[in-house]
Each structure stands twice: as structure tokens, then as C-alpha cells.
Image 1: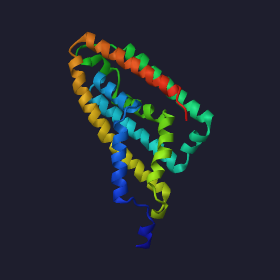
Image 2: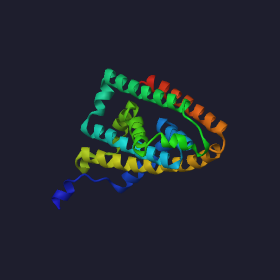
Image 3: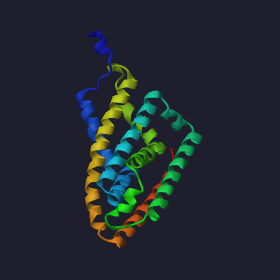
Image 4: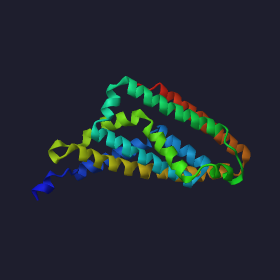
Length: 216
């Protein structure tokens, strides 16, 4: 029993409060949910859900970074922060180029065939881990809900990261589901598909500029 008391546990009220805050944060406009919305509308529900899984998997990296103290490096080092944000901005520009030149067709079969499920999943992972703002956000947000009196702080951070991932998974999956239904309307028209691809490209450029100019 004494050993059990030393294991880090989260209070129920703290967990529920953190979960509610995480859902609200996932719903607030940002690169991840905009990416999910656009990708689902352009490529379909399955692709959108795979991207969501990738984004949530990326959160494992940020959770581990906070638990191990690596996120503090990005918060303290201007060089590390700049390098990662430029990498993320470059990746977004590559996505913008791909969206602008994406082929169109009825039922969007050409676009779907060009990207495997694994590639779609990795796109979500890369989108998340190359955003240093997520690492710094986790560094500022997760420790607020950890209590040293309840045991190992690193383990509490991991548990909180798991709760955040669950909230993000549910929220982003809902966005992907409805966005894909909306996108079905556009897939009946080649002109509408092309317009949607152009919009996605412009949004990705905007997200890249926003990330490239982000401050710690």
C-alpha cells in the first residue's frame, strides 16, 4: 500500500478540468485543426482520420519532451527554437506546393492513390512535431495541473499528456468526420476540387508564414 501511494495519480476533479480545457484548446483556431479540416475536405474522411492519428502521435513527442525537460531547451535557446520553426514552415510550404499542383478527378481517386495510409499518417506526425509552439505550450500548460504532493512529476506529466491526446483525438476526429462530408459536395465538380486545392494551398502558406514569424 505505501508503494501505491508513491505512484503519481491525478485527482478526478483535476483530470476533468484538464480534459475540458484541452477540448476547448483543440477547438480553438490553430494549425492542427485547420490542417485536419482542409485535409479531410480535400482527401476524404479516411485520410483525415489518419492525419488525426498522426497529429496525436506527435503529441507523444511533446509530452516526452516536457517530462524529460527537453522542451525547456527550445524555450531557452533561440537557435533551437528558430531551427525547428523554420523546419516546420518549410514543411508547410511543401504541403502548399503539393496542394496547388494536386491532380483532380471524380471521387478524387488520383489524389488518394498518390498517398499511402502510412504517408498520410506521417504527414500528421510531421505537422505536429515540427511546431515548436506546441512544445513550449506543453511546457507552460501541463505542469500547472501536476501536484508534487501526488508523487512523481514526470509520470504526472505523461498522464496529463495522455489525457490531452484523448481530448485532441476526439475533437479532431469530429472535425475530420464533418469536414469530409462537406468535401463530398466538392468532389462532384472538377472546378470545385481545383478551387478547394487552391484554398488549401493558400492556407498552408499562411500557416507557414505565421509559424516562421512566431516568437517564443
